[in-house]
Length: 273
Ligand code: 13P
Image: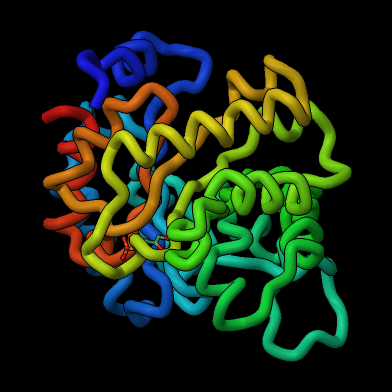
């Protein structure tokens, strides 16, 4: 770990990458009724100061988006609404799909694209991820693009190659300014849901690589404003050390975001509280 809170301190001072972005990806958990309770409890557990210092986003399943939107807006809770995926077309004969246009109408701000579970379990290709990402941008929302290596790739020493290839393919044809406004989540596949998080040093190494690849692709300015999250077995026990890394601007949290008490502790730990 770096000796100082350099990254966190510059963010708190209103650095170019703004406040830490702490996102809860609920995956396929919580009915819309459960979701309402979770959001209300989370809003109660977080202080106005927490929500000023951090930007928190919640990514419920599609069936709960409207309910969560209504709770957040009627209570004027400054938590951003997020989605977990979207189709690239605005409408059409695509049974079972949801478009970016539909998400934008719900005031969704962040859309996860290219999560490793989509890539591995549902066969999402880089080309499809690229199209999803462009659809999110077209509707003025912010993509959270997930990249990361499998255990096999890591053990073969191919982490940098894999992550670089994903970034090049997933961001192909995206303008420099748009790239500078993106969020990229580094989620090593072996760390997701396993209880085995990357060490802060390992997370920093790959997050720094992501920033340098983006600088090469889209210029130094885009690299500096790009926000990078770490995801994979984040808990309140490791959130502070992960956030202390210079190139970690936020966290993408799965299991530890499902329970509002637990997620509130993660947010507070990420803020060094
Ligand atoms: P866990 O925090 O449960 O490991 O999940 C990480 C993740 O996939 C977030 O998108």
